[in-house]
Image 1 (cartoon, helix red, strand yellow):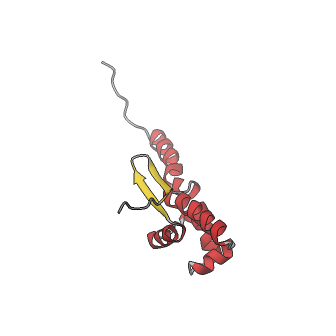
Image 2 (spheres, rainbow, N blue to C red):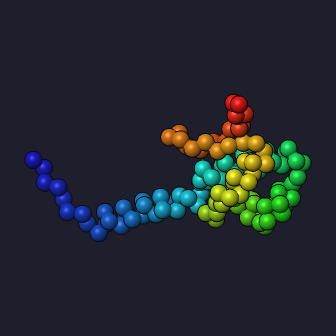
Image 3 (spheres, one colour):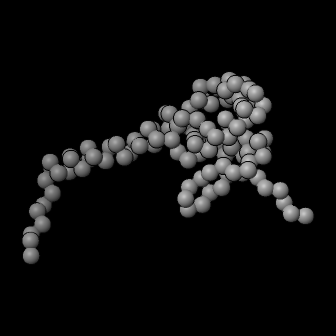
Length: 111
């Protein structure tokens, strides 16, 4: 049976260096809520013919925040209240399941 070597300081430093990008991954990749906001915002802007600045004014946020919510830059994410408001405005729903989050058209209820 092979003897397992003790971790050295070099190995520990190497592990720490490799973990740093993982800890900051949320700064580089948008979260599912950012992707959902991006899709809902585009639907809203197309349907009501408003610009991103106009959408930001309607949502009572700054245009910079609106842009950050779309891209996920700076680790910013939209609030659920704003996502739900946009869903109602464009007649969509957010579906969350094992595959992730997605936007879908809301179906009419059967009477």
